[in-house]
Each structure stands twice: as C-alpha cells, then as structure tokens.
Length: 312
Image 1: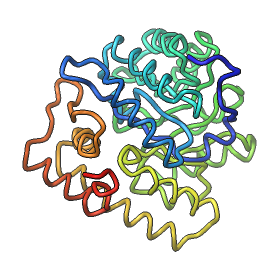
Image 2 (image 1 turned 90 degrees about the vertical axis):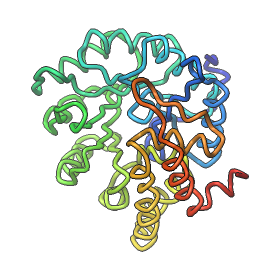
Image 3 (image 1 turned 135 degrees about the horizontal axis):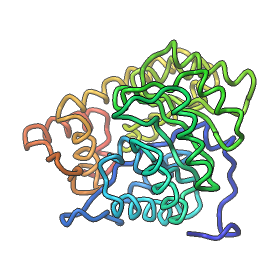
Image 4 (image 1 turned 135 degrees about the vertical axis):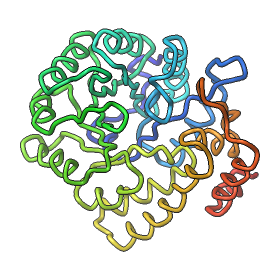
C-alpha cells in the first residue's frame, strides 16, 4: 500500500461520477490470483478513463472466493492501481460477522472503501440491513458503498433504509443492479437531501436511461473488456446528449450478447482472456465455456473492434 503522500490526488465526489468496473478475479492454474493479469486489467481500464476499481464484486465472483483469494485480489488491485484511483472491495457476504471480518481484511490490504450488499439466505428486513451496515462501519474506518442486487441476495435495499443510512457521511452512495427503474428513481431522490450521495447503475441494459435520469456513474462488468465505451456513455449522459446515449446504449446492448455465448459470467472471463488478460478460468465450481462458445465470444469482441485494438 502506498502512503498518503504517494497517492495521486482524488476525491470521492469526482471518482464516484464515472466508470468503476467490477474487475474479474483472474486465477492461475493453481487457483491463485494472477497478479500479472490483475496489473494488465488495471492498466487497461484506468488508461481508458475509468475512475475507480471494484474488486471482489459480482464480476469478480467475490462471494465465491476463499478468504485467501479475496485478500490476495484486493492486495493485487491496490498494488496495480498504485494510487491512480480508489479501490473498492466487495463484501457480498450473507451476514454481519463474515462481512465485518472481510472488511477488516480489505482495510489491512489497502482498500479505500468497501461495497456492502444486504444480508441474505435468511430473512433480513430494513432494520437488519441497517444494523448490518453499522456493524461494518464499526469494524473499519473506511467508507461504504451500498450494493443492491436482489436477484442474487433475495432482498432489496429499501429506499427508506438507504435514506436513513445516507445520514451517515461514510455511506458514500448506492450501486443498483436490480434493473428496476422505479426503484432507481427512489434512490435518486435521496440526493435532494444529500447532494453528494452517489447513485450508480450496475445493469448495462439500462445505463443510458439512468444516466439521463441523473445517475452519477456506472459499475459495468463489460467495462472489463470495453472501458472506453462506458466512459463515452457517462460523458454523453453528463452533457445530456440523449442521441449519443441512445447510440452508445445500442452498442452496449449488442456487446452484452456475449453473455449469451457462454454460461453467464464465465463468458466475461473468456472475453478478458481473448484480450490478453488472464487465462479465462472462473472460480470453482464453474468451468470455462467450450471451444465453440469461445469462438462465438471472440466474434462479438471482433464485431466491436476489441480484438483488433488488443492486437489479436
């Protein structure tokens, strides 16, 4: 971890108004974090204009990492970021105890913030969610970004609960990957009372609409392979350029079809490998897409000029 004097100057106000890719977690053949691939991925995304790096999130299959893999991933991303941008570490764990321990680990490894999902598996109401965040806040000095992904957790961050948590300055904002535009609008209303509260969209299929609604930025898994496309989208949204947003969203929607060319997120790992970042190995128990699927994924990348850009 770099000391404070070595860090490049940045503020959360600036960095949570751009593109923050949820980085894949590249593993080597021994299932250890591939630090060289992490470095290549960090350089690729930051040089394209991304404003932060999200490690051990959904794209990084964070809930399926071992404690050792999670710590190594955070450490590798912090080292690769080298102070150029903040590193946010995912805490997508089912209860407060594991999330508290993971948050302490992330802080020790140099993360700048933690990203906290709602508790899951068992029931968790608004008070449970609030206490969950308070437990993490009490465990570390880092700020928190909330993460709403009910299709994975089975629970939604209720807008009233988020509004209550937003009264704490260390709760920076919320990332919403639900695809529910009405719910997203409810999060945006929190900004009326707290303008610096950041509301980010994580579903690539609705990003243009949400940016024009007032979203501050995006957390896009596909920014692992096409970061400039999302940087251009955020910039178009910031200037209110609806035609440009529509055109960029059409390109993003076409790129999103690579997920249909292989099993879910495994396709993203293969896509990154095709661009020279990692070997395409996903976390256990998943296996990589077969040869035919890999060719189909490469064709999507080729259609968007990404293979050519990577010299492949």
